[in-house]
Structure formats: structure tokens, C-alpha cells
Length: 228
Length: 103
Image (cartoon, rainbow over all chains, first blue to last red):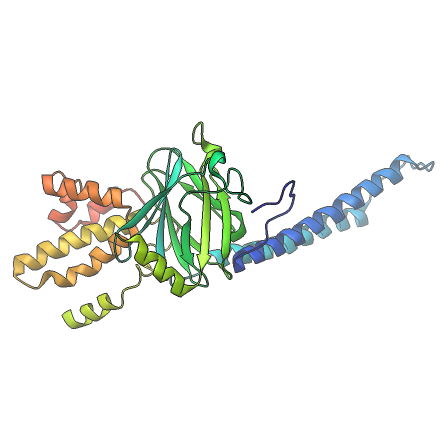
């Protein structure tokens, strides 16, 4: 989850998110360098006493400031496309989770064996234990096994929602009548928080997502308790 | 073939990757498996064969389709108002498939 007043991305819990953070650092560094250079040149322009009123042509510099930006753009595009294709790689999911958006809660279904389903409502502030996070906790967390590829199918029962978990680099729209697939995999156990990311009515800010990644054996025990 | 299907069903973990539906939109994947299950049951029971091989389609659509969709479709099937019935009646001709929306 995000720390108070956090500006940057959250720590990665999946390999894809690690790639995204590295790419973001790369692109941001390019932006900072270009902006600093431009600001410096502007400051030079504004503080010089030199004048040159008879410029006729500037072939060399025109070449430089066309070719160089083109190369910079290629240096941004190549890693970006690499990550884009990486997110679409052929995958063999271990488990399928369905996340269905409602006004204003998420429901989760694990139907590979039995029809296991539950609703996940926000934990009202009044019921929070000390140390829990306001507007982020839920009554029933979505428990999943770590180090496994999980296919998440996202849909909605009513209006548009969006299922987002920043630590895992996932944000996928929940559209009524459509099943959108996202792949999720966590390298470590833990709690990962997200919030609904598409305006869906008065309680749009109050339908969070909490993924609880645990060890395989514990996951099987949890799943057996779910089936009544 | 029935033995292979039984082994596949025993080792079933979740719906595998289907190259007919490689993209993000898996709606048609769910719909197609639901249709294929009923088509398989209809065809095999008409021939008097063992329908348990159709269970593969059932496991896949159960994994993929939201429970509420399956409940609604099962009710429609029981009532005879299932909208996919025309697709089940005859195999789609090349001409009619041109008019189908691209999923």
C-alpha cells in the first residue's frame, strides 16, 4: 500500500511490476535530463549580452536536434514495447479467479473445483483494529497462493468499475457483459492493496481490494474452509 | 478416448490457454465452452454414447464464466429460451459467420 504523501510507485510484488518500475525510472531520467538542459539553455538565452541578427541557415544544428530526439524516442520505445509484449506472453495459469464489480463491493469466485464465492466489502472505519488502514481494509480478503500464475477474469454486474492493484502492476476495467483477463503473480507472501479505478457512483472511493498471498499449503487449507 | 478424457479431467487444474482466444477479452471463450458442452451432450446422447467426455467443457466454462451468467443460462436452457439455441441447431455456414460480431 502507499505510505502517506507517497509520490513514487509502490514496491513491486511481481516481476512485471519490477520491469515497469525500471522503465519508469529510465523514462523519468530522460525527462529530467531534457528539462534541465532546456531550462539551462533558456537561462543562458535570457542572460547574454551577445547578439546575432543575421542568421541565414543552421544546417548542422538542425540535423543534431532532429536526429538526437529521434534516438531518444527509440530508446524509450524499445523497452516500452518489450514490457508490453511481456505482459501478453503465453501463460499456464495455476488458478482462475473471477473478480466481479458491484455497486459498491467486489465479489470473488473460485470455480475451478467447487463454486466458491464470497463478497468483499470495505471495512467501515468504526470497525478497524489499531494498525489497520482506513478506507483500504475489507471484511473478506482475497486469498491466493504465492509464486503461481493466476488468471484473473474481471467483469461487472452493473456499471463500469476497474480492478487495480498497484504493487502487482494490474489495472483492468470491469465491464458488464465482458470478461477481461489479467495475469497476476506475486513473488512473496503479503497483503497487497488496491482501489476501484473507474467512477461508479457515490461509493466509488469505498470499494477497495485486498489480496492476501500465502504459501501453497496454507492456501489449500483456506480453500477447504471456504467450501461449506 | 474416454480414458484420455478421464485422465485429463483428473489432472484438471484450471482452464488452459486456448489459442482461439489469445487476447484480453475472454467473453467468447466462456460462451463457446458453454455452447460446446451442450452441443457435445446433445450429439453424444443422440448417438447413445457416454456423455461423461463432455465434462471437460463443463469444467472449463465453470472456471471461466461468472456463476451468475451460468445460473441465468441454465435457467434459460431449462425454459427453452436460451439465445444460443440457433447456434446449436446447425453448424454455422461460412456466409452466416461473416455477419457475426468480431469478439
